[in-house]
Length: 202
Image (cartoon, rainbow, N blue to C red; front, side, top):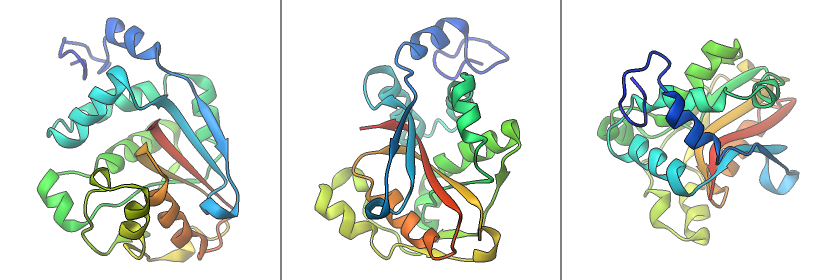
């Protein structure tokens, strides 16, 4: 089934929808240093138009099956796959137990697992954990987002990522508060490199 229009399609994305979404596809890599706590941000879309609609449906409207479609889009271009394969490990931004129970799934985890399966990059779980149920970032301004994210995450089993190139996956990058805080925690394990991969940037 096509994850966008619902048409029967074994590849989870029919040719018509694939063509439509690819119009917006533009791999971007922003380089960062110490202030952001990660080395680079890789993203594929601006958070607008059709891709914004699909992410909202996936994240907030109980349409978990859309992870297959979104992963297909991420992996549809060789330059994106080559960039992802520079990393040793992929892991998702975690959500709290309360949020996962409410939503039924972690939207970033489903995509990270699927990328791992397709590109043979190691998926690591039980390293980064969200230890408190924060207010949804989408409801806050930049300053509030930074305060909301601070202290929300903790590190476990740090040896799993020591001296490794880590790719942290999230769905949307707005101010960078969430991934910045996650990467600050990950830095304490002395990884070789940290990159952030998101579907879209707002």
